[in-house]
Image 1 (cartoon, rainbow, N blue to C red):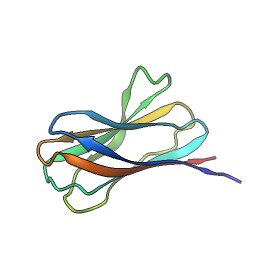
Image 2: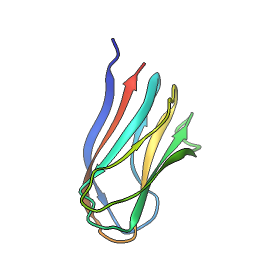
Image 3: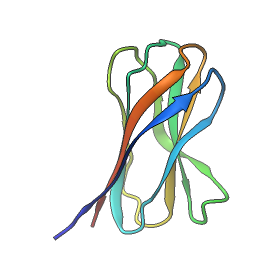
Image 4: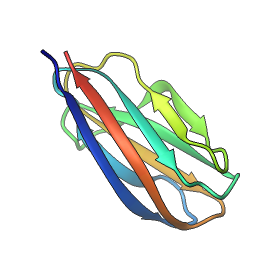
Length: 107
């Protein structure tokens, strides 16, 4: 039986680029979902990156989203079986505390 690896927290985000929301160990996972809630700004983005060693990071193709105000902003990744995934957030306006979830389902 598989289990879900998850993180749920709140993060203070400022008006700046590529702020690390969190990192999730995705060893033996069938992909990852990241949800960022409570965005009040309509100018920003979120992207996911992948690393084998949590030091050298690469963007995950098609894992970028323009943030929408007052919506749950969600990115789902394809299958990733080892390593780490991190979420980066860029805000041009709307600094504040935002809640988020990171989920990985073990295979």
